[in-house]
Length: 313
Image 1 (cartoon, rainbow, N blue to C red):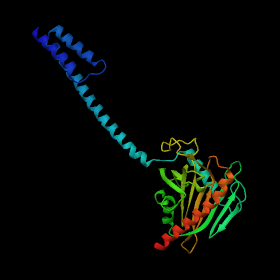
Image 2 (image 1 turned 90 degrees about the vertical axis):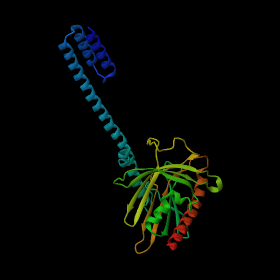
Image 3 (image 1 turned 90 degrees about the horizontal axis):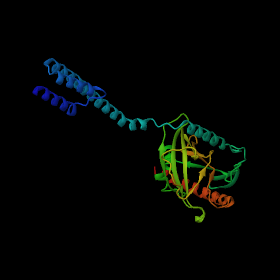
Image 4 (image 1 turned 135 degrees about the vertical axis):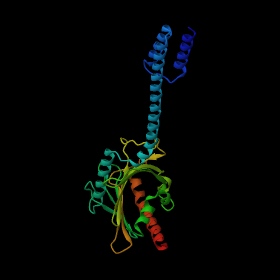
């Protein structure tokens, strides 16, 4: 009788402090222990002990396997950020949007008319800089085209024009800027998202504007195109600012920049096309008048800066 009591206590301790049994297993073990105690027979105790050993062995095995699976799952979880960095594809709808923006820019490069078949009109031409304008049906802003020649080495010019940390040191029209996100290269070029703030213009009448744009860099032999346009509201990316700082401008599709080598020289034909809606309260006539002068002065400053670099090298 004493042995039965001791066996019952040992069985209870095993169930409480031993490997955790799942499902109906603890009840099976308890029943076996109870029956062995009631029978008070050596074979009953041996049978109950064998059941306990099998159940606890299985529980230990399942616990080890569970821990191994958790380690594997944790390792995979830690690997996911690295994998995400390598797979950073631009969503298909955004890619199609940029594909259309590229086509619109190429159409705007036409000598006679813009993509809407509106004629380009030369507004100013001096010191190698030509400023043209054309109508943008349905919009209060205009298309602007800047043409000139610059000197230098292609990759250095690209860096001076597209690296905001460098551009702000010489371009008085740019207050600050940065690339928010770069996507995997596509068949139409390298896409990314930029955030840029313009400097005040027209003697302070035009306050700084915030521009959140798609950019598409298209490298070619001895040339590159850089297509850009504002990101419509239907495209949502976690990198985009949640609040507008100051006044938000909108760059329409058809905007971009081309740099193309003039064969046999270290000169490049530079073409810039913008269709920027500044928003705000200023009349379009005031903005158009100020834009001609701002583009002329900014382009001449760029030409002088690139020429200085070319001479230094």
